[in-house]
Length: 312
Image (cartoon, rainbow, N blue to C red; front, top):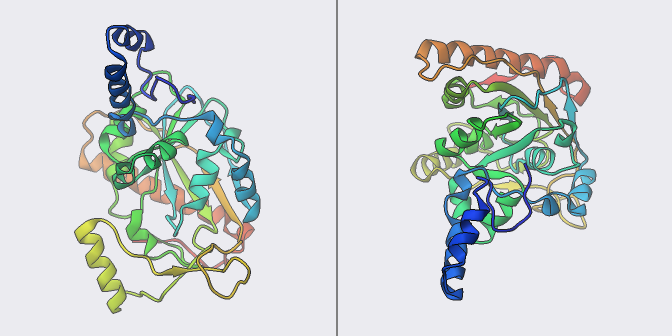
């Protein structure tokens, strides 16, 4: 699933056709053609992954610094495509980025599986940065991207969606286990439409690496952040952590362990036009399986025995 930077894209276009077109163009016309070919639609067509960047030694230091690890509870069949919900969002989505996007960091324990992580469309508006995030497996968060990946023949693709989104990040602080999930059913409909198995994932410690200024419901800060989120689909997080040379205050994440646990797949029958009842039924099963995954592993990662997931 990986590509070195070159004339091809994640959509695996026929380079022979490209070479043929280039042979009829002047040098400056060829440059413009290649630039357009490089830029157009790639975020919606399966990213442009680079083995070189995904194997940087920097990611190993990042992994060991917290530390960050991945726990596999079952095998994933590389002949299938999968849709995964990642929980919780946290403040930096560090566990998702490190475990799911970097080779040799964690997700390589699933041979034959190519992972793709969805990200807000706005981050693909910036030249060069968009190419960097596509090189490690990020794709734009829209239906076109999901459909392109989940409909690939031969299987071996896994699409990660951080279901709670930025709204869930408002709850991201140490000791918080509140997920925005009950009314998030779009990913369930996608799984049914494409017949992609659903895989629940919970990342223990994801909320522990940053603190937030108090923004409980009813506070002026929560109201402001909520209004901003409704208007722009973005919010301003007032987070803080440690400093570079001291731990009392700063904007570096705390060095606390993050453990991403991959649950067992939920088999999904392909239903091109699922009814609301079918969506609701699968959604209920997904929430149950996610809660069971949390319950089965929470004591291993210092979560109190009486702590339960709060799904809202």
